[in-house]
Image (cartoon, rainbow, N blue to C red; front, side):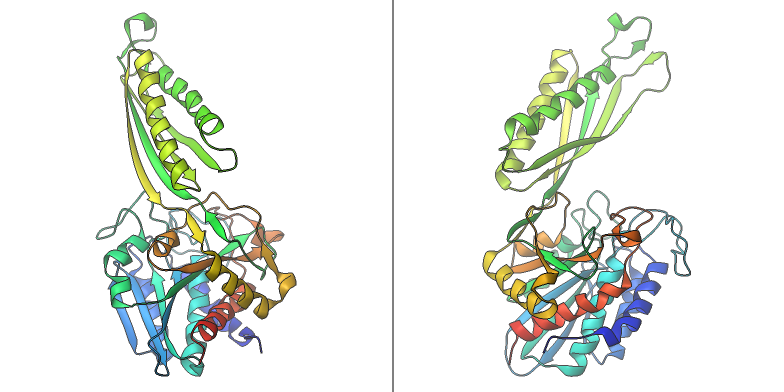
Length: 398
């Protein structure tokens, strides 16, 4: 019989809305972690390891005699945004909001934890991983890791302390019908890199540009030239994105600045394209600046790698998901998304699978992630929690 956790929807909704009302940024999720730990203890879970990757938690539920183990991960951090939607559980923390549904992911895993702890209808160990700082690419808290929470947990010996044969994750997806599951074999999310460009010119009077080297002009030509990288250097069948999203220069309308600064992101689906785009970006930046008599320096940081679902594990998880919700409610995605997801770092170490859970294709549930009007649909939590139970009982079948 398919797992039905609809009776836990009210509990998961309450937990989720509490976390939503009290959001915390990456590596600062102290109250969130304490709340999670309190519930895990209420469920009768005794093996709870804390402080992994900073504020991360790993709770272990065991049954039977097998030494097999799997991991299930939920991310627990919020975003530095101000919530625009008003409700009786809106964020009470100025400038911080759960705009990506991590509060919902946490509630799902807590629901699964409550059920698994009570039933233990499996043979082995399931490690429930509550990960900090999934959103931390580009910023980091005290004691954190600049590459995000997955890296921090791996650095703190996650897989050595909690050996597992496979690891699983899910993310809600606005735009997909609520409660439907979706996935694809191979690339699901792109590698997410960031870069900064410093252009050094020669300042001067705006009325005497011939005596200066205008870094804004140079920066503008770099912006245009960069657009050729994907169009003329990446295989059209292997998607890539280069976006310059920030330009800073100048102090007044009549002063030619000394420097200009740009920043942006690169998204790629393969290591080959990642290497190629980085090298071409460096070539373009340095040579365009040189042609104007200026200097430019590229600082490039590789962030989350591309997330690829291995064929064998994906096929098995897909079958489990269809058994849970029906073939008509599973979507085989044709194309990957170009967003980043640090769950990919786990898949660099152990096999696993990552799926998407529809948050709604109309109304508030369809508002895209990282938007201050985003709203998580609490009705999808029982499906997410049931997926974790079904995967546990399948991969650790008696």
